[in-house]
Every structure is written in structure tokens, then in C-alpha cells.
Amino acid sequence: MKQYEKLLLENKAWAAETVEEDPDFFKRLENIQRPDFLWIGCSDSRVPANEITNTQPGEIFVHRNIANMVVHTDLNLLSVLEYAVVHLKVKHVIVCGHYGCGGVKAAMTQHNFGIINKWLRNIKDVYRFHRDEIDAIPDEEQRTNRLIELNVIEGVMNLAKTSIIQKAWKYNQQPHLHGWVYGLKDGLIKPVFEMPANTHIDSIYEYDDL
Image (cartoon, rainbow, N blue to C red; front, top):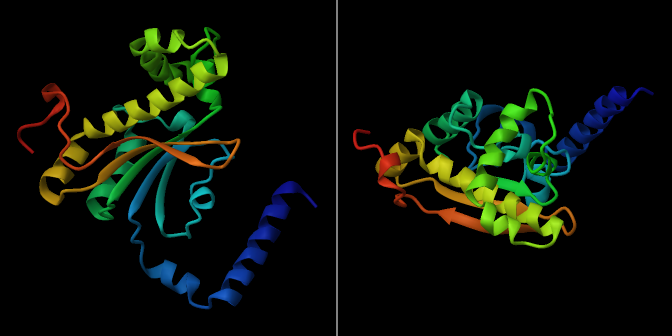
């Protein structure tokens, strides 16, 4: 059996088991989507949002990219964000990184990774902003993990800088923004940052005509 055929076979088994346990499961999912959460996570296959939060399909709206970045020029991310906030009216947006992230590790080097250089440069900027703190950490793994945390925090801050979030805060008093980091070694999520609705940021980023 080919590898992709195994995936299709497992899908059939999963669908059959799901219907056996809950006959109306797919009928409910087919007609409505009302997640309370938008998850912005890393593309790493070891960090699936539903599994590590023990949630069901339909409970979390998910966007994933390399190193869980929130970049102000990423139209894919911004489209997902606007749909989740404006149309799905999610109550929480979570930026979730993970310790041992390969994207962050790569950004800390001076190696050329081709087209991905342009993406990793955003993480390099975070490193530059916090160079003194990171370089003062003697252990290499701890340095990387601290940049992973700082990258998540920067991602949450970048969410707050968008007109999408600021407009939702002004008119709906939501969503609450969260920065989390998942541990591959123990499976536990560590909250590292949060921003409730209407948290003030530097005034240069706050829009006055929403």
C-alpha cells in the first residue's frame, strides 16, 4: 500500500467510527461553523491545534505558517484574520509557537535558505530588537527558546496593530489576544503574553478614524 493510500484508508475508518459514536456529527458541521478561537500556529506537523487542545473539528479556526508569524504584509494571514474576526466573530485569537522551532533556529544563523530568507528576516528583526537579552543567555537552547517566546509576543503585538483588531475592539469589545508556546518535550502549553480588548499600544499604531 502506498503512503497516500494509507491516509485515505485511515480517513474512511475515522469517518465510520465518528458516525458510529455520534450519528449527527457531520450533519452539525455541514451547516454551521461557530468557533470561538482563531489559532495562528506553526506549520510544524508536530503541533496540530485540535489534538494538543483536545478540541473537536469546528471549535478552532486555524491558520498555520512557518514559525507562526504575524506579518503585516501577509494577505493570506490578514484575510483569515478578517474572516475570523468580522464574520465568525471569534472571541479569542491565539498565536501559538513551540519550543525547538526550526524556523526560529534558522533565523538565528547566517545561512542562506533561499526564498525563505525573506520570511525569516521578520524573525531576525525580533532578534535584533532583543539582542542584548538573548545574547546574555549562556545556553544555546535557552537562547532559542527565549527568541521563540519573543517572536510569539511580537506576533500578538502585530495583531493589535491591525485595523481589523482595533475596529473589532472598538465596536465589539473582542477578541482577546493570547500568546502561547507549546512544549514538544512535555506536550504542555505555556501562556507567555496576552492583550485583552482595548489594550493601548503605542499611539503611532492606533487608528483614530475607524
